[in-house]
Amino acid sequence: MTVAVNLKQVNEQIQQACLRSKRNVSDVTVIAVTKYVSVERAKEALACGIHNLAENRREGLLEKQTEIARDQAVWHLIGTLQTRKVKDVIGKIDYFHALDRLKLAEEIQKRMSDERLKCLIEVNVSGEESKHGLSIGELDSFLTRLADFPAIEVAGLMTMAPNTADTDLIRSVFRRLRELRDSIQERQLSYAPCTELSMGMSHDYPIAVEEGATFVRIGTALVGNEQKGS
Ligand SMILES: *Cc1c(COP(=O)(O)O)cnc(C)c1O
Image (cartoon, rainbow, N blue to C red; front, side, top):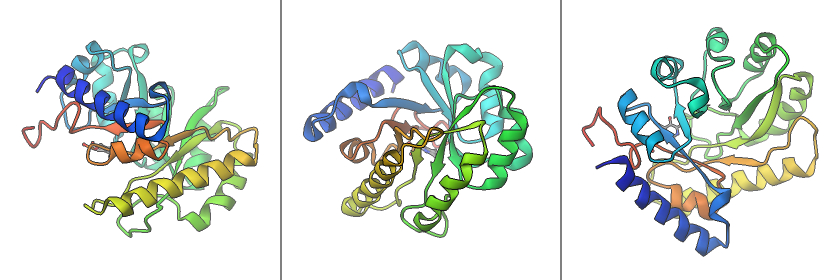
């Protein structure tokens, strides 16, 4: 399938989800997750009018950027980052979706010069052991501590729903993340505008949009998965 064909499908799904939830389509940004595909396929996505690209690892990001100029896309890093690799991605990404520990905040602070990096705090809403992210209980104090890191702007929250067919469970996870986002917004912290909700992947993005996602991270359903031959 071409990216254009997939994108049409994705846009229709998003449109319908927005209709159901009375949201504006323009409030939802599609991020193409290119971690399973070639640079050529990523370029094809850009040619279709997609502006946002995501990789989950530093290596994949750097590989894509050997052939796609820094200013040709809005770049997202959506996977956890080892502290010692922070220096390799600073200046190369616009959003970091997996802030989940102070050590990482410290390293970002150390490596950024004057600018701020837009970060999303990853929250393990479902509480699954296999998942990265802060527990809901840790979120408040973590957020408070981030006041000490002027290089970090808390742009929003990110989560991954459980991999299940139970759509009610998936929905409850997304809804909870939105409630957490809303309560942070109410604190009106200068360093935490927290407008973004990064949630929804190939199998669950329509639910995420219904529950308020502003960033959906779509890989397989949009650019495919060349490792699996789809
Ligand atoms: C791989 C990945 C995605 C996209 O997954 P698909 O199911 O292929 O859409 C989204 N978010 C994160 C954090 C990922 O690692």
